[in-house]
Length: 254
Length: 275
Image (spheres, rainbow over the protein chains, first blue to last red):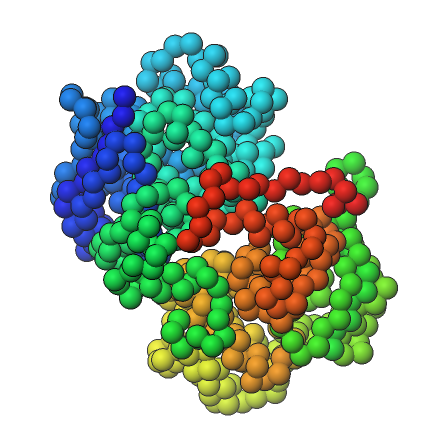
């Protein structure tokens, strides 16, 4: 069963600072949606608000696509919506083995058969049995990110929130993790919401995307629009130029 | 200007032996932009740090030749080394959040560099610091001079660091991932500033980065490093004609706009590349 995500008029305020200002998106079940923007644009905060990690000041977040879907904030919602964070060096408990890290979400949600599920989750992300009783510091960055993905998938969620899942990784490892994510999405019929500053990475995984700047949505477009350069906003245009590289003859446009 | 021949950097490991991080790197550098690219652990940063004389104390640096403008950097006395470092060879580090002094204003940090390398009066030092801030395209240098690093954005902090390194007018600038902590559009602005200054002053630049695309569009010449060695040297824009399977693999595994490749090709590391 698939679920989608709808956000209407979301607003996140920290003291006097408006981090996310009246943003609405609709992600259909099974779709993969990208959010692009620079630091401070509110893209990660938006994702965190969906996951319940940032305070919501106004707006409605809800699951769509099936009857009787749980409300945000409930345990059932959290089981369906899981998150993978940017930095695999910071998001795994340094004093817990991979086994313990993966057992925790199962214990929280009262799911039995932990042994088999952990083994299966590790197999799925391409880590063999040999990794099960290792500590995070004994793993490379790419392996850690695979553990983080396994931790999110072990609850069999329908929506995966991805916050810059590959930006801390080397280019060759990034390719492996992107392929893994795509494979997982196909296999489990997952819905992705992915945040990144890299247009090429976002368009690789996502068919629809939104560009954010200073907490607001500046443009929504499809990956095809982007590939054909059908871009309306100058800001999106600048992001596109930046993803091509340095051009000595174009420095005045940076 | 800089001659590096068979540079090796090694660190003691737990078994009582040494692990070589850099294994025989050789190149010469004139007044040009040289890029060093590689993934984490390839030894690119250690190469830069060895030239700068910033290898951690337990590390061992050896080379047949490591000479800057005729000065032997391996055997020169520490006093001479200190005079060069920051004076004639300067280094820009990755993240202004961590590499600037958090309890000193930006202006004072720039003046500190000047004090260490030139005899100038307070008034002249301030003027030169303001002038350098202007050169890195900071619109209101008077205001930024009195700000602390936490009060400025990442891009502004990185410009301040460039100003700090350039105020002593070095001949060689080593930039270790100078734009990796910055947003993509800010990256290019900072690079454009760096590019202009390097061209105007005729400095040599060593640009160390993991970002193949950025380096290949910015530098005159690129060294690709893998497992402590240079596996390939490429001219600017010669990325398409790369011969080494590692370089080609690295180019191939990047997702690109306007291209539909699913799944992405991955890099199949061969043990013989590391020999």
